[in-house]
Amino acid sequence: MTAPHYISETKSDMRGIKHGWYAVEDDGNLSSGPFSSREACVARITQPTNGTMASKLQRGPN
Image 1 (spheres, helix red, strand yellow):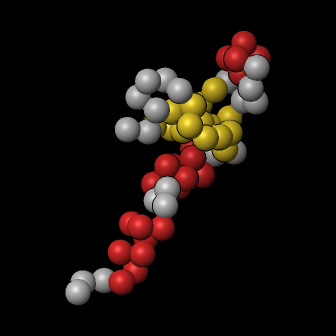
Image 2 (cartoon, rainbow, N blue to C red; image 1 turned 180 degrees about the vertical axis):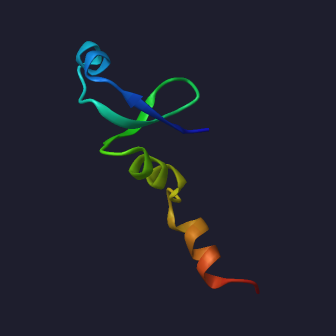
């Protein structure tokens, strides 16, 4: 599961990354970011990673 997580300026300096919101995997690895807001991060997390799910939703029931 991927969750939003804020990396402060202090922590970002230690990690050598920019501060901001990041999508973080269960194992603690950053999967994308930085985002300017939590909402932008959540929007990216909830987007399908490939067209499969989106196309199924757009087609509707059989």
